[in-house]
Image (cartoon, rainbow, N blue to C red; front, side, top):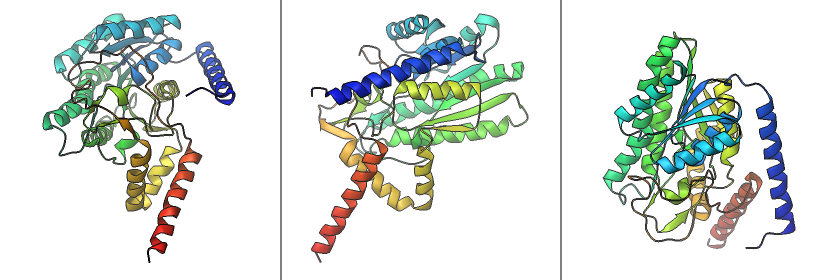
Length: 347
């Protein structure tokens, strides 16, 4: 679809804002400057964007992922913004490899300031329609990978008397969504892991366990995941850029707190879910049916579950429908109003 003058102007404005924001972040002195930070799942998506933003503020970033070529590309992006990045090929489903990652991080200067459990995969399909092995693989990566990361880094933090562990959850750590059951299970469990570990470390005031809870992000996650739906999934609008969420992650590392919603307005939706769970779950179902899955697509039963994607490295995915919160609310109002009219007409 050809881009209109208005869309070109808005895109130029966004790029200008991002450039200015990045320059401001790089010019101010960060508490992470010179500190060792580990990021798993750094080949693409949010992990890649986070590594670059951490490098921008002067952190010494250890980037982990399964594919050496994409890690090297992420490291190059980190160096382009003036930072330092060391790639370590790591499959987080292997506890030994995660322990090796922690050892490599310690080799820099004997300390690790921040560990980011970000690696994750997904499988699009129903609970009964997807192979059980796929469900296990998602949970092994998203949950057990984080468990292995926590077991590797917490003893280091205890010896240091300080450290920040960030578990990258999701809005789906708090509310369910159809057709990604194992992903939802893993993210709910990750929230529980954060809370349990935070309680265990209550007598360690210098150690912080944080959870980042982003709403939908425009990353390759939706294109490279295993897919048995027969339709192309997109990030549920309104999407946000990986760079925006990465900047929030940097802020969380600098100013640790229990959890951070990105955007903050997402917390309002969770409050509504707590008050009216059945209504919100129906809304989620209807909105996903309309916006989440696009054109028919050949089945992709393996995706990147068992092997890393061969796609070119990128933080961004193929954006789906472009609609803001106001547009989404407007559609929902119109959708349920029309259903009400049809119901009355049928009486």
